[in-house]
Image (cartoon, rainbow, N blue to C red; front, side, top):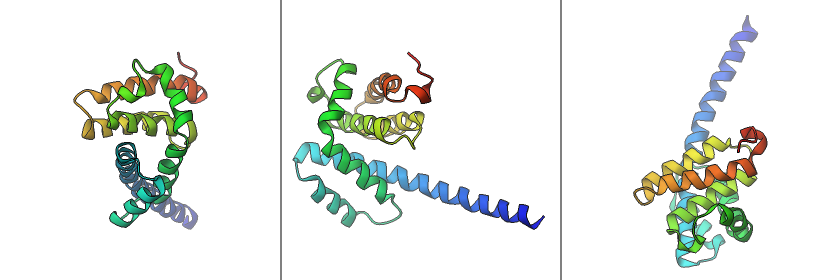
Length: 161
């Protein structure tokens, strides 16, 4: 009996940590969007931008995620562009900087962060597009990322076409 009770407590603690972790991840993803936007617009070195974000943003944030995603997106821009270009209806540079930043986050997570389910990747990018993007940018971001799922997450998505 005691073992079952301690398991329930352990599961409750685990669930509480996961909820905090999800909120921290969501805040970190928002900061990644802002950092990529700053990097695209100002061209400042990514490490300096990351340092600035660490200094200016206190509180519970998944900094490990922020550093991994932001720094790797900036260093993998060319390979991320290779994934994106075939599924876009226009040149990547013709896109709004917010849309570009969101697509970079989405394609990076789809390609490199298999710990995040593809539906979560797409949903989080859509929600950020609704908050920060132009009126219908969330539809565009959704369409592009959805096209990438069959290539980058074929097993997880059931190799849908």
